Image 1 (cartoon, helix red, strand yellow):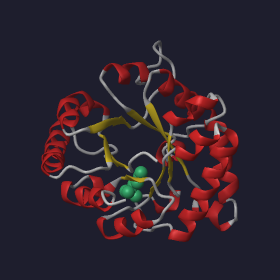
Image 2 (cartoon, protein in one colour):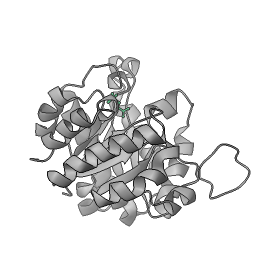
Image 3 (tube, helix red, strand yellow):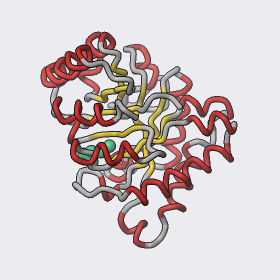
Amino acid sequence: MNPPLVVGNWKMNGGQKASLELVRKISNQLRKHPTPAQVALAPPFTALSALKKIAEKARIDLAAQNCDWHDSGAFTGEISSAMLQEIGCDLVIIGHSERRHIFCESDDAIAQKIAAVIRHGMRPILCVGETIDERKGDQTSAVIMRQLDSALKGIAEDAIDKVEIAYEPVWAIGTGLNATAEQIRETHAQIRKFLISRFDKTKGEHVRILYGGSVKPDNAETIARIESVNGVLVGGASLMADSFLEIIRAFSVK
Ligand code: PGA
């Protein structure tokens, strides 16, 4: 298995100046205390270029939070994956629950975005997760399988190793509520089974499956100890250098 992946998703917080300050703090510490974990940061679009050099020196991958699937054209307000590749992005978060639920992104749009990111040599972080009503209605597994099936339907057998998957229960994002270790294990096992049966077995076994949803310094160690967790996608707690570094440290011993 690749090293664990710890991703900070800054969402629509902080402009270029605040993002630069934060990446400097994080990268200074990582240069002093290197980690075997793979660290990635997803600042707002306007800060991506400015962060590239500093991130690179600290071996931090650069992630975008979204992209369009067309390469170019009359799509006012959109940013293409070709444009993200040009400025040196390594990863793109696709299908985050805020995109699915607030901006009504369809499974079909998500599938096209995943394909575009891979076509441009970057790695998509595909987010999947159920709402609280779906969990209560015993629909978790069906929802996750539908999201995976549709997002990855166009992906060639041998391209699955370019994909990172993040299981993020919608009800755990930004709420302070965590999925239990048992809930994470169960859903991760279902995702792994899907990957192995659908794609090349060895490659399917090696795709990283992250967890996301209210990951904080005080629960990071417990989450890191769950065997099926190959990293985390962190929102709120990645906006402060100290708390994000503590989470990285929890994954440095994995
Ligand atoms: P949170 O966000 O850590 O603030 O819950 C996670 C995410 O949105 O990926």
